[in-house]
Length: 287
Image 1 (spheres, one colour):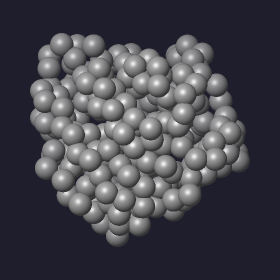
Image 2 (cartoon, helix red, strand yellow):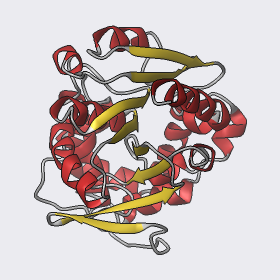
Image 3 (cartoon, rainbow, N blue to C red):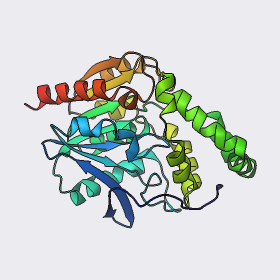
Image 4 (cartoon, helix red, strand yellow):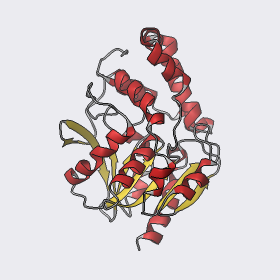
């Protein structure tokens, strides 16, 4: 749709797993059980789990996944990029990873993918670890709606120096509450993934489809496994009050835990507290 279509990225740090015609990029750590498969949020990649993975890997096998259209995974031009489509591919991905059952986890949009996958395939999912998951139908943000109506103007803006400065700033301010955490965002990685061939096109389609295909209350009620719902108390993307609503709708019950002084990416901003809460819940549910 727009962008420079130049791949300046270093080689993928993980391995590529083929699911049908699509190669998924995955990174792994740890060997424990159960395995925890993690999906990133919008504009994210496996890198959003780098701070938490070493902490989780002492107890679990942790597998971070780049969703199709993001990170180092393939970006096919002829797929819908909605959340239900992504969730439909999860069983084949798990089979390629050698997993009969596992924990599914995800942040924001990735949490929505995990929820859809758990509702469709309850036999595959032992439990859910969710960080501010996207749920309930929502309109795309104004910037994406503008890009859909006026792709040429949006393309020229985001390819300009001003546009390229705006995106990282928006991501920083939305993701993190503290100035220190905002300063640690890898801006180069974010822009390089978007600039790689097909990156802008996939990201735009993904963002437009996410809100419309977010899991409904009916979908949540179909999920029989237990869940941990984590939320940053100062989340400016999805209000922390949604945690209790989602927990009440989940069919298998849920434990809610809020992390003070953090925003939307609380798993990055407070990785130690996130990992501590996640591991305590896993130990309680799967002794």
